[in-house]
Length: 400
Ligand code: SAJ
Image 1 (cartoon, rainbow, N blue to C red):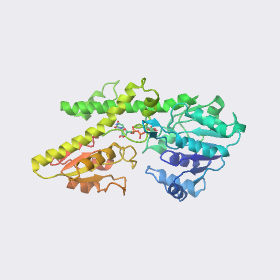
Image 2 (image 1 turned 120 degrees about the horizontal axis):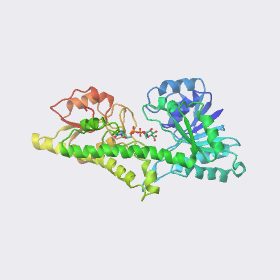
Image 3 (image 1 turned 180 degrees about the vertical axis):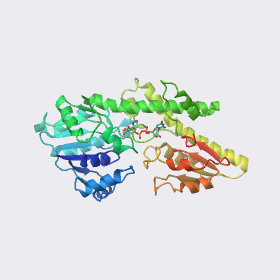
Image 4 (image 1 turned 60 degrees about the vertical axis):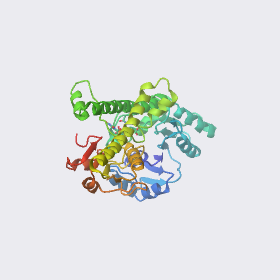
């Protein structure tokens, strides 16, 4: 069996590698020539624990090849980004472009699956597009939606062990997709229809966003009330039916900070809570930036000189190199703009070079700074000894 992955990004690449480790031959397609070239050398272009070793292996054995254009296969998986445009409306143009690329290659009995997070109804739309482009195949291709659910940083384990929700445009498509995923997924494969599967993905991420917003709201209340929010949450979570998440510098990444808008843009009147959670989580990053700027002013008033400030972390969450929709990046940009006359050291241990930010090693930045703002709870930071002579703004519980 040959499988064509459209997209070799944070989800497409690991899934292609895991699939290639099972009994199938994989062709991975990406529009970025650098990604194609690196993958063909067996080198991964993302940071993900354990993935490099697996990639070298499947490229060496010839089970995974990369290319800029798709090849005729038996299964096609669309794993491209779905960002939003303008007014937080989902942009499915990459999904559509990938569908248009594979349509000419499809033959009777092939399986076409969308994994990209998509607004409800996208799989139906792509089904119509395929049959408009290839009318002779109408009803003869199996078409399904199966959202990915893996957590960056733990992708290899979760790709194999997480349960999956699989929804076909018809029962036969669901069954065909279940057969395919059972080649490399050990978790349970739950059958449904395409619309429910699409909605399920949006529900999962919106649910997490709402829960994090609650933790972030508590952190704002606690800051005003002079209460340690980390201790508070730990104590409240001792209740058998309470399970509060952790506050941080905001919510980032390409999933949780994006997917709820797929619901709020389409169902604006019905999604009041989801919409408010987005507002709170966005506001938290703004609030952190204000706190840092206030600390700089306070230092200036107290010491009659500008402080050295260390901003610790740029990634959207701990122990990864992914800066997409990162609240820490937003905070750093804002503080740099507003405090141009201050010596600001930017730290991100998981990134070597950044085109915009000049990066400083974390130990050096911590040692030199008068004000240290922890924006991401990277593992490395936890080994830094707490220095009471510095102003420490611990937004993400490094020292909790
Ligand atoms: N965060 C907090 N407090 C927490 C947990 C997370 O502030 O207690 C922040 C993180 O720092 C980060 C953001 O939330 O900025 C999102 O991080 P995350 O770890 O919650 O989620 P992602 O974006 O890495 O992955 C999510 C996962 N979805 C759910 O947990 C419901 C993952 O399973 C999905 O596959 C992924 O989105 C996706 O691709 O949709």
